[in-house]
Image (spheres, rainbow, N blue to C red):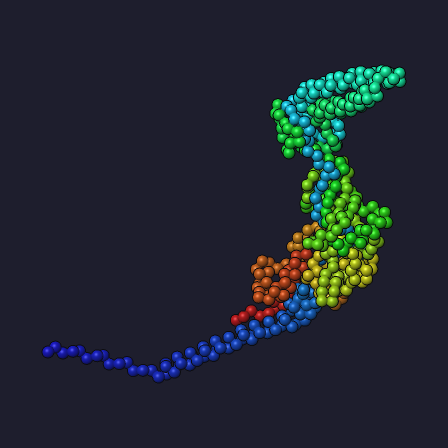
Length: 507
């Protein structure tokens, strides 16, 4: 059997080398733990220092503290002055334009429509000839009635002569009285026939006049429904056209029943209440008129009363059945007013934010009065000339520092300065380098150029506050103040830069 070779003998183990390896691994673990502890402690120190140190971000007096550019930024608000004015008390409603007269032009006699003398949409005058029906049948009827009248008049004349002769003979006792009475009755009968004949003549003449269709009112004529050559019937339901009176014209609208007493007082005093008709968007005034009258009943389903206003409508901008927005001026009062957007409602009632001379917004309760679309009457709580907030009030608290639109923050967190580089509203001048001159021991100013933070530094500043909305806003405000060239922000940035340079680099 073949012999299996013996395994080589194992090398001897060096105990000193094993102990040295374990010692090195132990020291590495200790160093790693020390480094981790140093990192954790340094991070805790930096976070604690930046949130509580008077000179760090968010500390009092620093860029993040109250009054510093790193603190809560000034709130830009819109403003208005409290003023006194003649405030019109108005009533708004939706109205319908209603013409004073709408007439359907219907033929009153039948016949062939021979002429149409108007143009569709034409403005016509009262009595103007608009159409003509063939008059020949009615001319013949008139001639026939006139002939009958003439015949009966001749018979009446002969009967009267005979009656006169019979009366002479009766006086001579040559004729019986019965014959005289019979002849007198015949005369009366013929007189009645004459009256009938005259009426027939008048009717025939009237029918002949009806062949001429004239306008009964001034107005605008609509579209023609019958063309010339067609036969029309008397009092047809459709008619030939419709005439609508346009000048003047009424607008009918509804007013709340609670406003009826005020309207009646003004109307009873003889005051002319102005009514304005506006378009659908209330952006354009169509015409101005005056209040006319109220209806005599309240609509129980809506709690309103119908009212009418009359407009001259000289420009014909109001069209029949058009829907318009109506604004009626009930009265005019002398009042202290603010814009509607300045008044807010809270648990304790209406209030406004008043801007003081120190540019701090103060919450103040008010007593409001009459209200219009744009203005609110202030009965108590404000004085003429005070400044109130109209925009941005939802971001304010009592005592918040504000800046007005068109202003930029002044050094020290105050508002009221013009924007850098020109008048309010102009773009800020770009800042590359600014010389900050801290005072030396001898009172002289040492010149030192300050570089604004670069893009990488800006990003690090913003990343340090990521996850904290309030601190992130402070950082952004601090960087904006540096860009605007604010001396305090630039000095603060210089100190931070110097402190960073003085810190030893990590080994």
